[in-house]
Image (cartoon, rainbow, N blue to C red):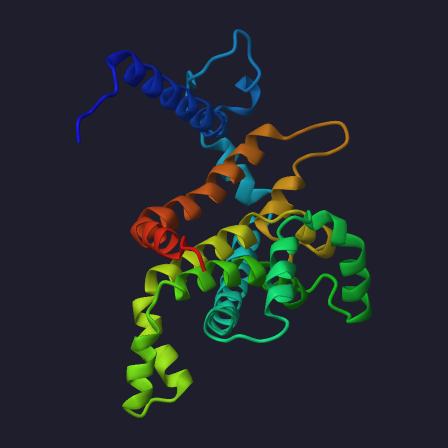
Amino acid sequence: MIDTETRSARIVRFGFLGLWLLITLFPLYWITVTSFKAPGSIFSRPLTYWPTEFSLENYIGLFAKSQFGVYVLNSIIVSTVAATVATLIALLSGYVLSRFEFRSKGALMTAFFVTQMIPSFIALGPLYLLMTQLDLVDNRFGLILIYIAVCIPFSTIMLRGFFANVPDALEEAAMIDGCSRIGALFRILVPVMKPGIVAAFIFNFVNCWNELFLSVTLMNRDSNKTIPTAINGFISSFNIDWGPMSAAAVLTVIPTMVLFAFASRWIVQGLTAGAVKG
């Protein structure tokens, strides 16, 4: 194939890509720089884009003046459990929607797509009333249940697309050899679908890790708060504690960056393999 792209077109394309990268990375850079500034120099004039003197005071104060370690542990527990259970349920539901035909299949798929168009904060009132009646307000188990319900539709759609790319002959051959349908699913299809499963789990984990509205509404005690709720606590009616909030934001981003770095290959394979017409 002959490369017909001219030099000027290539320059324009890379220029736009560079500008997009700069706009995307600058907020993360600015938060990181702010977290290493001494509290008194954050808004010093003239404004500096690099700390004149690096300080860990914001990070030290973050753990000394708040229960940030508890918030991190709560986020890890809630996000991991919710993402794991949601991915497992979505694996089963995606398999059913891909392999079987039944009367309400189209309506069910439509309902899954519609749930992705509704902002989560619209359901805050009904969810709070439901959790109150179930005595699950300010309870990590209640938050996990809601996160599972929120993650299932997207994960199901994603894994259904991946199942559509796996030949039926694989499980049929396993069933001929004596496997049950469930056995063929977990022994034959799951190993083949590992990239898609990993991608679904990571997206579920990140969504739960970063979720704010539900956690702020349902979690009141410091012992139950997650990281987004804790970061939101640095904002008051008359002041924003920029130093500790920036330090908390940096520490919050690191786990997801590491997770994406180690699993990037699986994510790309999962998304591309699942992006089929089915």
